[in-house]
Image 1 (cartoon, rainbow, N blue to C red):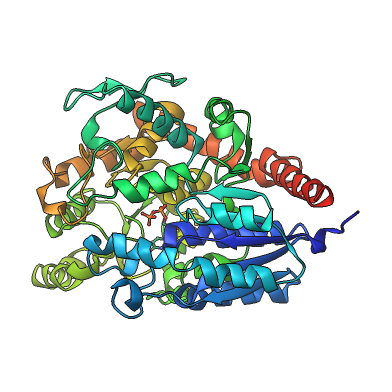
Image 2 (cartoon, helix red, strand yellow):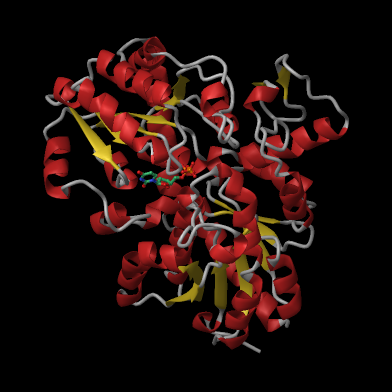
Length: 491
Ligand code: UDP
């Protein structure tokens, strides 16, 4: 039986966290731009956050359907309305959060049963393990997406082998084995599976890992030229399974409204004045500092970051997002008249920043980032050097990739993971002088600055080529769709 592309319905099920949902919505737009039908399942809060972006895509002719799931927050012991990872009032509630996700299986399957055209593939976040049984039930391929690079996937794969042999040293630095490059780490820098904090997530993690077994393939937000050796290795260790690098996904947001509204339709800035301010700056002169969507930073570290930026004597944009510590941070800002002190050359953004819009502006000269993979890749795509300050999860691995593999960044010297709820206990603090000096090294006209900026410029160009017609990511997306069409025909 032959299918035309719009008869191929992909069901997308993202995890309820900005760093996971944002690239999945980009992926929805990208796939739909090739003529296939997309049904994306979002809980109410995310449906509100992404509605404007999806509505605009639909009015431009893309076949994207948004179906809402009710997130059973209270039933799982979470406060009412708490339906996104960034809204958790306490990280001890993470297990409740996963319990709520488990309860979404029945309503999601009901939707999958009803929708037309008949779903031919599920693309889901790797962390939603019940999708394995759902795909089995509907006899359709399940493709995993978890927002990590192939470099991190490979690092984690090899770290599990070491761990199973009890060979991860407690404190001494060691090399991750079987990596194409020399990657030295310490346990204190590793993600929870190898370096657990107080919160025991072992069972959830194992359940997720086990559910990977029957997956049909992996979609990766990266591009082949960026990490060719790691893409090949990843394919190999997954037994030759399909691995499609289709990124950078953020590049599917071409116009400034899409860039501005990505992830959140409301930002606290007056966009017109903000862009005027950026236009008034010298090209490549502004440091943009943002530490992701989850607001995991201590007051002490915020102060060092702010003072390091001030001491750099360069213009900067600082995103002030401190979660439950926002009031304290605001008190420090106002008691120390920080905003007044830097106002001639800098801007503070409260809440959500239009990151991709900011990074695409020619005035931006460097990106101080916590090295979440989305942010890392967005900085790489913008062609700017990264000033790396990893905080948690696989962010130290992303830092290693930036520093040791592609050479497009300098580090502030963060040494260990900040554990959930134990942020104040992390050992050596990054000081303002570390921040100032990293900014200087990335932006100065000296040897290191020139090398890092040139490397950043080159990979930025490669990133843009990858998604153009004839580019590797463009081709991978075509192959993915063709393969699902063939699988539908054989079914
Ligand atoms: N982001 C944004 N504005 C903000 C904070 C984050 O647009 O104020 C976006 C950012 O562009 C990225 C995502 O949120 O796409 C964050 O994902 P990442 O993997 O970098 O880190 P996480 O927030 O998951 O730690």
